[in-house]
Amino acid sequence: MTKPSAAARSGGWLAHARESDWPETTTERSEVIVAPTAENEKQLIESLRTGLFIDGAWRDSSNGKTFDVEDPATAKVLTTVADATPEDGQAALTAAHAAQKSWGATAPRERAEILRRAFETVTARADDFALLMTLEMGKPLAEARGEVTYGAEFLRWFSEEAARISGRYAIAPDGKARLMVHKRPVGPSLFITPWNFPLAMATRKIAPAIAAGCTMVVKPATMTPLTTLLFASVLEEVGLPAGVLNVIPTTTAGKVTGPLIKDERLRKLSFTGSTEVGRSLLRDAADQVLRTSMELGGNAPFLVFEDADLDSAVDGAMLAKMRNMGEACTAANRFIVHESVADEFTSRLAERMGSLTVKRGTEQDAEVGPLIDNGSREKVQELVDDAVSKGAKVHTGGQPHDGAGYFYPPTVLGGVTRGARILDEEVFGPVAPVATFTDEDEAVAMANDTEFGLVAYAYTRDVNRTLRLADTMESGMLGINVGVVSNPAAPFGGVKQSGLGREGGFEGIEEFLETKYVGLSDPFSDQQKA
Ligand code: NAP
Image 1 (cartoon, helix red, strand yellow):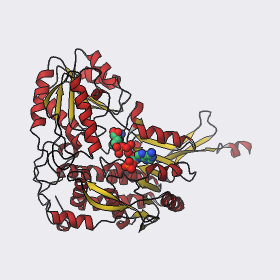
Image 2 (tube, helix red, strand yellow):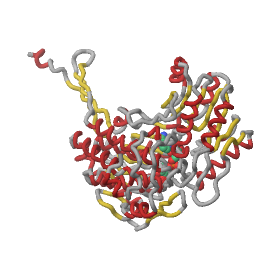
Image 3 (cartoon, protein in one colour):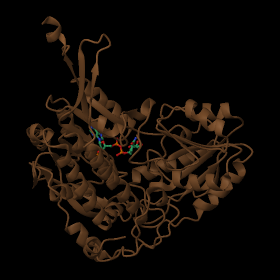
């Protein structure tokens, strides 16, 4: 339930919203979202801190410059944000480095309690976070509420993990030496985050870093810095010491973060974004053999076998495709459907996708918001046109909306043939291309025929097939008869060119811990000498 204080702060416009589970947020909406007024939006935007957050203080950029943040539904400017320079980047790393020693020495319980208070504050202010994400990123309010729940869960999960960091003590195999293994914080870390999940992509890195005792510098995406800034003010409010978190929005990402990656005070780089940028950051990180976590692009196959429950396959497809308007690294990018059920699956999916309401995400019945910018929309159209020129049939959608904002209609393409770019490239939009297969070997070969390997989905009722797929699919994650796999308690991440490392689960905190081994002499050696 919405807490009274939060409802009062945001004018009560979400009074009927319910806390929804992440997987339920896209298509099955039973909650009634009350649209915020223009005054609610204005109040929220005016209440934000829009400076750089360095060493516990809010400040202007060193050259006084700012940049605009736009609402993708209207193409109008929401507000302006301080634009960090390379000098500001240095100041942020200096603050993180100075705070590391004392922060790394805090009691795990103290770090856990800061995270717990942050979880409670973000949850209490869910209305504000949801509206802000809708305004700067475009997703419908109900989905933004889902992201607040999901993003806040990383704070709760890692508050619980902070106190469970442990090591081991063992007797060496020859019975003589003793082996002690313990964990230490990696040290000052740099986080570079994308625009598509403004809260969750930040908390998925910040929460385990806090739990492990690392300090950090965060560079949020230029298109969506506001949510990270609001989250920084929450961490300030709940008592995170100065210098532990530093936030530096900038329009010159490479110039500001490049020198930090080469600076020996930095010990870890965690990036979420495109494979192209990830590759170039990995090259830079090689110079000082920096520890890296890379959450990169995807090209998720969604397999529908002949024995699938088609009702649930279509439900799952709606989630896997339409969550976040398709702007998710986990979005189903290619539907690979057995030829015996392909026509029925395609027409049912087209009917469901064609009936979704495309509107500004703040409006009451909005189910699909705008894409992030015009460049993204043009890329989506290019991929659709290419597939059609190679023989695909448009079942619904296929042409952009007129008017303000970067809207694109939910689109289903049938009979997509190999060679169409849409089967190889990340669509990042509400377009579902359907291709067919004849047997399991072909389906798996098609699914694995990509340099990416983040997630795959499969619908089948055959238990042995499920177990075979768990072995044969080349992906870090596999969803069986589900359209969403993300869960703060599970390790999120990819294989192949989808990345390195894992976020969430028991694995998530390990990314921020060094393993230290201490060799000890035989404690009985004195007695043996005597
Ligand atoms: P992007 O263009 O790679 O940008 C991601 C972040 O990197 C942004 O903060 C961006 O800053 C920054 N950046 C860009 N060039 C840089 C450079 N040379 N040096 C340092 N930083 C740089 O990706 P995006 O368009 O924001 O996000 C979409 C991509 O993210 C998709 O490929 C998606 O699959 C992937 N993604 C992956 C996951 C995952 O967990 N695997 C999750 C979400 C998204 P600016 O904003 O200033 O450009």
